[in-house]
Amino acid sequence: MLDEKLPSGQNSDPTGEFFKIIRLEEPRDWDRLPEECEILLQGRKYGRLGGYFANFRGLLEKRARSAVVECKYIDKDFRDVYSGFYSRKFAKYQSRCLRIHFFSRIVNERDLCSLDRFQDDYIGYMTVRPTRAQCIGRTIFDPRRLDGVVGSICCARYKVHICGAELEVQGFPFIKQHKDVTRCAHAACWMVFRYLSQKYRTYKEVYPYQITQMTSDYSLGRLVPSSHGLTVSQIAEIFTRFGLSPEIYCRENYAPLEFERFLLAYVSSGLSVICTIERENHAVVAVGHISGRQPNENLLGGTEVLTSYDYLQGLVINDDNWFPYQVMLTPGPPRLVQTSEYTTSDIDAFVVPLYEKMHLTAEQVEKLTLKLMDDEALGLKELSPSLPKSEVVIRVLLASSVSYKAFRSHKAEGARAPRGIDRLYAQLPMPRFIWLAEIASKSSFSKSKVLGEIIWDTTATPDDVMSFLVLHYPSCLIVNDVDFLGNETDRIILKKKLIPLDNEGYTMYSCLANAQ
Image 1 (cartoon, one colour):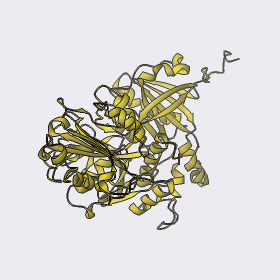
Image 2: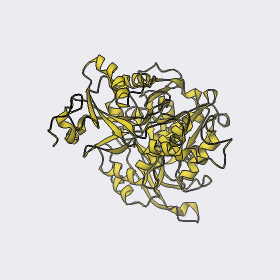
Image 3: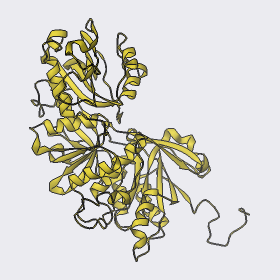
Image 4: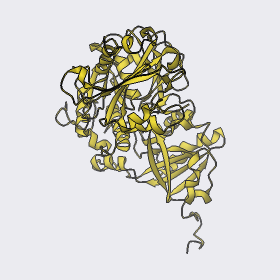
């Protein structure tokens, strides 16, 4: 019987061996949290655990009020590494982890089996691995529920099960390298892959040890233990084995400001991009951005018209040496609460995880857009003289055609494309992914509004200036038949003159979550 008296010194709560609730009502409770976790890990002393909690504490201290600890959590990522590496060591490592869930309200023992009632208070979780080196495993926090986190961030929804209750957390995954098994680039690959596998059913989930084995054809020695990290080419090879069609960008191959402008285009598209910093032999993941309402004077002059990059203040990154959602600033803006030690100028190269049928790249779409806007027959001057080129701001990004159609048809007030264009977009055949070149004025862009867009076929080649699906200027709408191989002037399915909008336009598209 569960209610029978137990011998002195034994826990009378049968759940106490498996779960523990720690209240975080006062600052000293946070000081106690690492110690409580070390005790739960069979009394081992992990000297760096307190330091890890100190890093995360800045994000959580003002929001979290309770921590629910799963004491014997089976983590599939650590099981993968344990099976491939730690189980073969002479020293004994346990195979189970801790998983710590944070809530923004007080949780009591009686609530343990009905935690789904606290969905609105769920911040997220972190996993503590039973290793002597880096011990923070799979971690997902909702950036909207953390202190000091700002910007537009790539997010996916993850289901969590605790004592039979199902919770959901929206965020971008984070993990620290093991040092002896995985390095920073392996951790960065895992973060990108875990996000993509959750976001798109095309990609299956892969685990850390599996990632270390995905460079066997390009290795510079043994794969495990890893001591050299990964090169940019090896990262691209891992992307390819995952089922992606990666693109490598090196700063030295681009003019000043171009490199970071194209990086922003991909991050704005909801793609998490691995960035390398050669002087530190380090890799981080760009997962979002922070942009202002006025141009950043330190970035002006990169193109003949203003672009969204001219408004950039910084990138949001996951750096496995620190904590999630740090800000990597551009030159100029003041420091924020969670600021990285690196700036955007420190990035030497980045690798983009493109879908295999995305043939056009960001720089090619930008070039095609500027060329089309200057075209004698299809340019702004001819079709939409109400918007002078000197006032134009363009924003280039990728989008899922399904998401874009839904955004323009059914989303929040102000997002619907005007004058029946939303219905046209909903019915128009499109490839799975499209490139958008949103067109705004300086005034509308400062209010996150656009006046039109050019929709490009991502599967087209960069030599075809007529590879757009729709050209929507403030004063004109054109639908192009991309299947037609004859004379360019015969490709136009629909051409309609429009009266320029009296207001400031409609909401620019975004697939990112706003932290603040």
